[in-house]
Length: 223
Image (cartoon, rainbow, N blue to C red; front, side, top):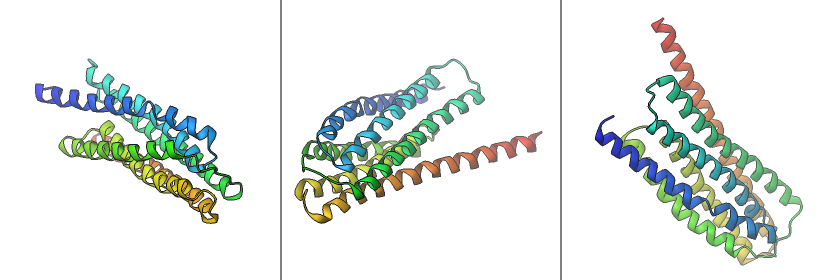
């Protein structure tokens, strides 16, 4: 690895660490308001931020391990990169399922007191931060492709889109918690976000399987 590659890898690792540290308070600051508020979107937001935090930590740890490892075994690197993407995919799917369950439940049982200001503030800040990281990881992927960084780019794209949906839903709850349409806006926002997460998770799995199939075909041709 050249000095330029080492410098670039170091910057990428620092970016991943910064994103991890910035995301760390998310489950706490969204979890506390979620306990006092019955908003479906806010509860689901807490669940998905927790899953995403786990995915960010695992991805950062694997990337750090690969860049500082002494082994040059391509098979080992591929396995580790696949594990990182698998965790990211798992976070998307688990978050999607949790949000879907809560959203559907709230269509029939709903009571929101409008106490979602803290969650709304966090969602707005999350939207701005996650959009910035999404654009940054996209630029990194275009400069030099790396499977782990590409996984982060997809995760932050999903995070930004989710935050946009959360901001819209929580704004409706904060402005008019007792308005009849608010129940459906809150629940629908949750369900739409859930479907988006599930779609992205399944799409990543499909693409990974396609890549694995191509690699197996190439190896068969060589043999």
